[in-house]
Figure 1 (cartoon, one colour):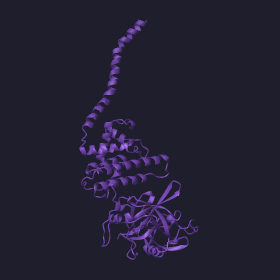
Figure 2 (cartoon, rainbow, N blue to C red; figure 1 turned 90 degrees about the vertical axis):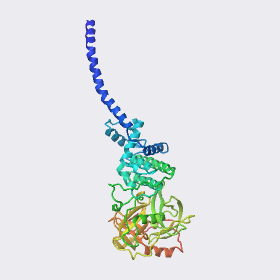
Figure 3 (cartoon, rainbow, N blue to C red; figure 1 turned 30 degrees about the horizontal axis):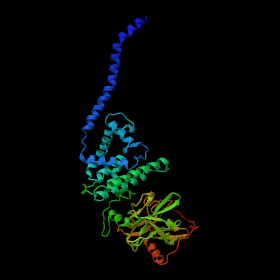
Figure 4 (cartoon, one colour; figure 1 turned 180 degrees about the vertical axis):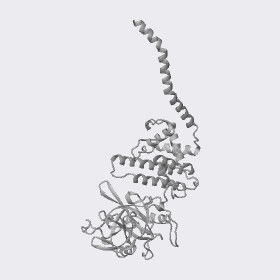
Length: 456
């Protein structure tokens, strides 16, 4: 009996083996064909010397910074997001695979996809490197906004893009700020700084090709709130007017950040304006009323400890003296606002939402508006909602002539409209206070009645 069964099994074994072998071939051959086609395609990718140099530079960042962590929480490796790896595999007819299993040739092929998507070949060194890493980190569409209104010189332009990346990274994180978001921001900023170091180490090459704004990017002049590094493009239409780029270049160096520590480990930023080369800075009283020795940062990166030397609670103005300062850039101050009319364009520079030296534009809607400070009525210049934000406080309100015509002060809570102290009031304060400085009180004033505005 046993022998019969064994004979029967031996008789069907060839057929069973053939079935199993056929199934195995049907399973393996498509995958093998896909792998062979991928190898052929990857070996035939038109890598060129410019891409190779930029790619090697980007890969060198891995040893200088933590791996870039996407704000959306996608796993990242080699500066590549899982989402981009999935897309690349799908475009090449390959099943989705975890990023931790990515192969070396795939890393290069994904970067080539980014290189092509961002049209990075249009830039010279080191902008092509920055372009490649920016497209990999932010995507082709978002990174296109980094290329608007760049300086002509390659290295300053590349450093400007790195700064814009930091701003975009911070802007994309919305409350609540969870520990994972804090880690993402920190690691992303580490990569930005490593990229800045790499750019700084590159010898200055010749002029890059002409930089063209992205065709799908909204013109900055139509944006009510602009990146600190992409001021709106506007040409002067009347004699004596400056373009927005000229205004930003003229006033930004004299605009400072005023840092206050509101709680242990938590700092808030406001703004101020330098008006004497030896370090006298004008800002709002409410900016420094709880901190008589704030830290002040200049646009060129220098930091100073400041001392509050004069205040006026009623006018909401204060003077700061930067310690051991000299030869500082100053802003041009207008004598009055008689030439300003309702509807005229105005500009502001400040640090709203923690975004340093943000440049925004709007129009005047009232020149002689009454705004209260405690129980004292003040004359204010009023601007539409969406122009000023928390962090603009103490910063300059600038006319199209490039002169400071006021100090930004508050936002009307009910309407969102901005209010600014006109230059006539500012000059009155300066005339009265510069010669007789007053020390700030050790305690903030107790009168908080009739304050319908939110401080910037």
